[in-house]
Image 1 (tube, rainbow, N blue to C red):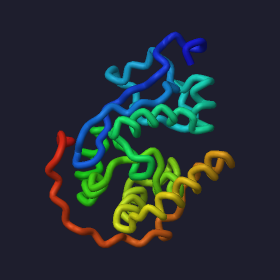
Image 2 (image 1 turned 90 degrees about the vertical axis):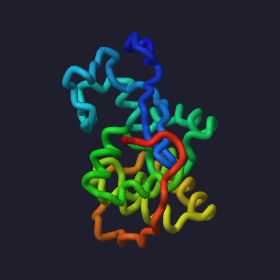
Image 3 (image 1 turned 180 degrees about the horizontal axis):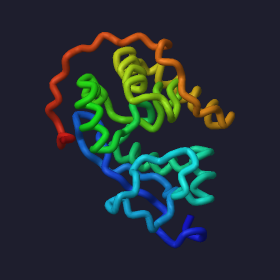
Image 4 (image 1 turned 90 degrees about the horizontal axis):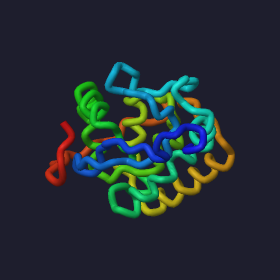
Length: 186
């Protein structure tokens, strides 16, 4: 990363986890270091985005760019399995569009999860939410172990990142939750 582009090796960004607490996620930087998102560049990344560096494309394809999040896990900010941590702007947007989105904050965000294994990258926010809520409502140590093994299978097979059909998941029954700890996402 450093040899190809003289910018920092790591990328840090504010994300939301359990009870709305805000933390900095750590990833290997995959985009050019001169990108200024404050000056109009789109924050969302497309498949063939020209802002992605050549080493960055490899890191994304192999999912190695996510490995520094092990530091987030060791520091207690993330879990190995759980809903992926969202950017602050997405939490606000998705909660306005889908009020149940706030239920994702019932658990710590994770490095991998049901929505990443079954949903992939181009699944809609609503469909990912259904998968996240299904995971939350049906959580067990055994299901986490299975998801970890499924993640390793996807990782080593370089499995597809195509979306799934939303009719595969039923809407989970939701329980009310009072979110009281940590900083709140606005």
